[in-house]
Image 1: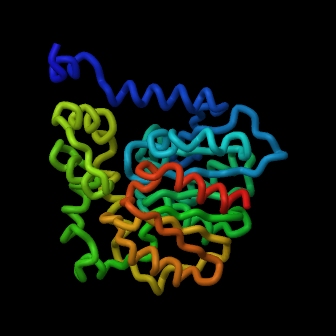
Image 2: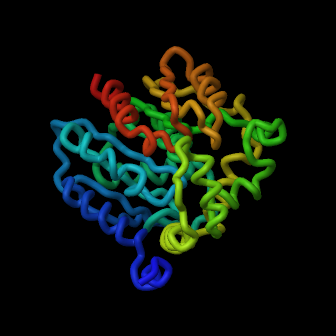
Image 3: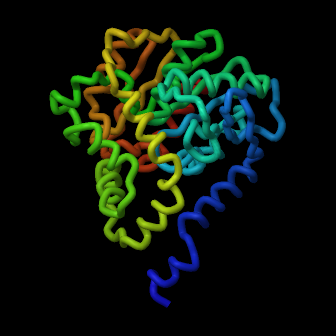
Length: 303
């Protein structure tokens, strides 16, 4: 049977998603959905038993796939030392809202409500890409709740004018959305090319289409609005300075959020921030260089 015919009967992406779900369960986490009221529901992987003798670590995903796909390779390194919580942000996985807000500050307040509903009032957090925007907002809004912050390739310090000034590979917001929310194989190929330094040799269209059908077809317009909200009227002068110890991790060859934004973020946060640049890595540094990514997280979070 040819791969194309096989893909009609068997989804490689869905099977991979099942594998991650199994590995999260095997790591001692449970899949829980929490109704926050006002039409907002959030899904989160939570410890089956929250041990008060261990600190809490919140892992916040970015735009790629869902929480399981971005942290599945790293989970085992932290569940023995932390109470690990891995939420799906609004309009990813099984989290959604009927409210009109699309800002990262709204996402942050919803994640905080979720954690409070689980009885957690103090945590450190890791935010990858868009998850870093949400994590930064949590640290700014709830300084008493957030102990330490890790921001990975998170262009928090970008400004609306950066698009016009040519800082990014894309020329406008519509082009950015078409790549970050791929609906066709050629757009997913472009996203992968921009995210990784080492390029995949073979990416057949049937395989990419399978991924798109499973991971990229839900909440497309709402996710587009999330991207628009990130950029609209954004100015560095409006961004609060967080006070927590902050680790900034960046892929040296990031083409989504160029390294300049990492330097800018370190200057903005100031003396409480340290910047680690990982060579031969792009935007998906957590997947491209997982050992270095985990090593730096452990050094920072565990001392």
